[in-house]
Amino acid sequence: MTQSSWTVEPPPSASVTGTLSAAGVLLTDEHDRILMVSNPYREGLVLPGGGIEFDESPAQAAEREVEEELGLVVCVTRLLAVHHRTDPVQPAVTLYVFDADPIPSGTPLVLQPGEITETFWLTPAEAIRQHAFRGQLRLEAALQARATNQTIYLDDNHTLPGD
Image (cartoon, rainbow, N blue to C red; front, side, top):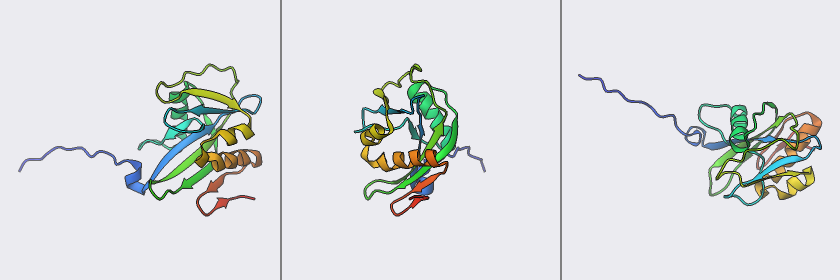
């Protein structure tokens, strides 16, 4: 009897939990403006961030994505919001928003080709208004969490803790 050698590929996160996962970072400058990015494949603006890989935590993914997309090395400081979002035609997704220390607005950014087309420093009200529609509530929650020093959980039926 011969022994065969084989490797097991780790499954994508959706096949393990039925849910996709992504993480972003609420980056602000010394004037409390929010750094938002545009993607060639999405309407509206979003926070820097992206998918969580099989072998990393949400915080690691958030930091990696900011470095890949903008050339910035940041250290997330705390979790602001978790948003579990369902859709009748797409897999469910859990999105994490982390906080980070402010960065100077003049900090040079190196945009990831094919991923980030432009960056914008916006007031909180402008950032919420221009955010891709499905993330507006999440950004509002992250800003509320930052102001009240708490973490907020959102899903189709809950906002915890909320007002």
